[in-house]
Each structure stands twice: as structure tokens, then as C-alpha cells.
Length: 125
Image (cartoon, rainbow, N blue to C red; front, side):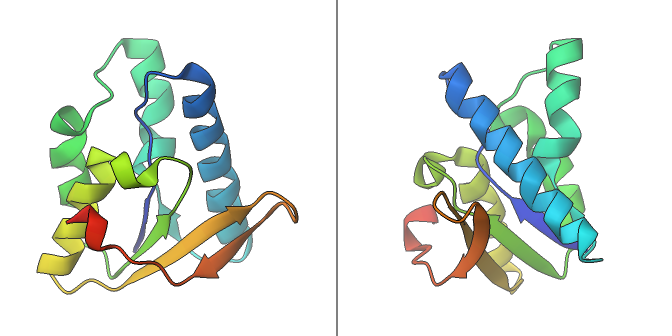
């Protein structure tokens, strides 16, 4: 399984909706290309909204780690604010400790597509 790590929590509602929308577009692109991915943001967003669940790393950590235990690769989606994401920090730290390869992607606003990029993830540890 490939785990999609992307930022979610922010006090800015517009920024959160953009993160969810772009993560959903990325997941749709992967699935359309027959690449099987799992995104906790896409899985959990509606549940958080409809059932008033917490949306922070403390609450979702066990859920994410359970899925990371069966992950063979992580796709890190480097959206605006990703460097400040506690969830991404935890997920990428787990990847480092367990030798799970990480590929990084950014959204290109000009082309409207996701591009694989080289990224320094040291700020996440």
C-alpha cells in the first residue's frame, strides 16, 4: 500500500478546504492511473465534519501509524504549510525510523498538475 501524507489541520478554513481538494485530486489521479493509495485526509475529512471528531495529530496518530505499518512507500504531498504539519512530521518520522521510501510531490498551479520533486525533509524530524 502507498500512504499519502499531506497537511490538513489549520485554523484557516479556506486553506483547509484547499488542502482537502488538492489531496482529493492527487488521490483521484493516482487511482485513475491504477496506483493504489490510501489518504487519511480523504478518509477522515467527512467523518471529522459530520461527527465532530478532533482533527489533530494526537487523535489521528494511532489510525495513521496502523496504516503506516503496512505501507511500502509514502507519497508526501507538499502543499502550502506542509512544513508546519504535526501529522506529516509524525508520518515522515515513522517512515525514517522504519526505512519506508518517501516520494515528494508538489502541485503546480500553472499547469494544474502534480509534479514529483526532490525535497529536503529534514525540517520534518
